[in-house]
Length: 457
Image (cartoon, rainbow, N blue to C red; front, top):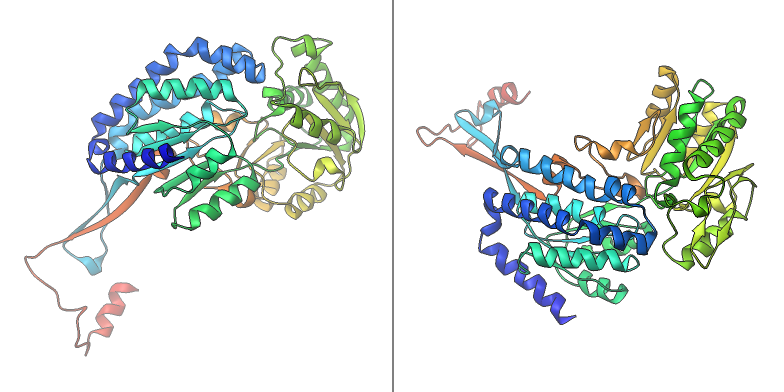
């Protein structure tokens, strides 16, 4: 615990020395991080297989590749982002210039979850480095093997006083949260997010919370069912359903429910064979406690129409579709975070909108329709952190789109320039001439109101 306090103090001393304010310094360490990622690529494949039985293709596409793409984007754009931004000056400040200086916060803390342990540790770190901060990184405890590789990578790529990493259980989390930081970036559950926010309040520390929630997927009667089935199955069963933006549950119009269920079932078989347990491309649940929770949710309501198999010993939960779900069933009371897809039939779109709006705002929303009026109706009457039309989860792959939640699904955003902005303080500076000095704003105010009213209104 003492080493955590010492690390935070060392970060603050290093930041005060001013090294990280140099754009060249930041670029150098972004390159070092990229080299470290590539150097430890095979170590990461092995660690992901042990923790989540995640195949190489999935590991590269959703973890390593995303990071390489993000680093490339920051390296290309950083010099432009870091330049002060000139903005117009109003008439009241005649003969002055206005600019915004993008300066680092100082020492930031990044705490990440176990489901995408590499991406969700290092993607925020890229933004923190790009903006000129020092950082303390706390990867997830449950994905211990990946966390060990992350620790090794960070130790190799950065001086410890610049970026440090600590692994361990909740006691380590507690000790870290007791330190003072200039910004906290947390990805995880809503419950833990509330604890982080409470801890941050002690020092009035700003927080970015990337949480989760029950992200709905709506399939209207005019949707392309064959394509919808493939894209929903991909988004739902990627990483064995352990994705914060996975479709949590499915609202499907009654006229297309059967072909959609049949289409998703067929696509599961096409991707993973008749027995997905034997598929080398299908992952495992992180631990036995999560398997037990999913097993209970699976059997607590509705009718299993596809999948349903559980092997606690190997942490296997089959891709599962559950029909005839009711809104008050246990599976609809919490984020599923696993390969279970509840199906809820609807006839009127207004019913779906009303149901969604009764709950908390989700991290993502997915709509399958070719009708612009229905699409506009859903988007204008609901709220979510982000989402897709006629696809799932792929909005996070575009670094030009901000990623973040709203309400209970989180606050703040990142990816691309939004990461740079999130980890920067945007300092407003007005520079005024001294060649002359207007006395309009100063007392006495006699006969000045009319002129000031003209300028301000």
